Image (cartoon, rainbow, N blue to C red; front, side, top):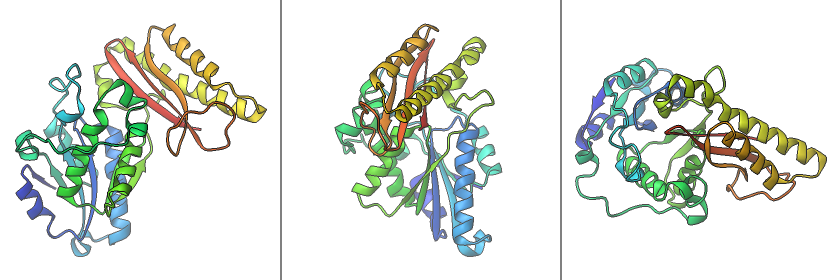
Length: 292
């Protein structure tokens, strides 16, 4: 596995690759990221043949903590940088090339050209509580796509709205990239794996599973309401929020949305749905979702 830091090094390393699968990350990796890497490896081997040296298939991961997607009050400066460990894990999980640029490498000049997703998708849910977040994500991902020029890219479904924004961006910009969504990896108790789980105290970690349990209850209520032909979405969302508050959480949202565009649901709905939640436990903000 190669590790490169500059755009020139990356482009030299990528030259032999006729097929490129890309997994962008911010580092501080966990098994969820490694699942995405393994999925990228499987796709390359399936499409390019098992002998990557003859077929020209290459898996690429980036490790870059992107300042553009952090608000001033968020944890950019304290976000864990664990490059050596990250690279060891990536090497063991099928990665051929790691691109780990510095800020000066990726943003040699202030990034004044930015990608602005449509407000109806980017200013709701996460975007409502983290203004500018999806501008930062879209801008860095588009830039990384331009640099790596992948044939396919793998993103986790845990960041459901982010995955949708990236899919729409690729479609709207006519980028020749297939976006693949990897399933959410969970701990044995059901907590969605996240780099920010490392901020939780032991007591908070034991409590953290309640977010996924709240979403399971919300999904069950949606199924039951749809089956009965009577679904009061506002009431079941309010009940889910209150149940978390009663346990000491500070929920931002627990909500039922349509999968295809994340628009609200007001009653029974035959379309595929998703329940999404974001809440703070102590100082740590966690997100999760379940498709219904």
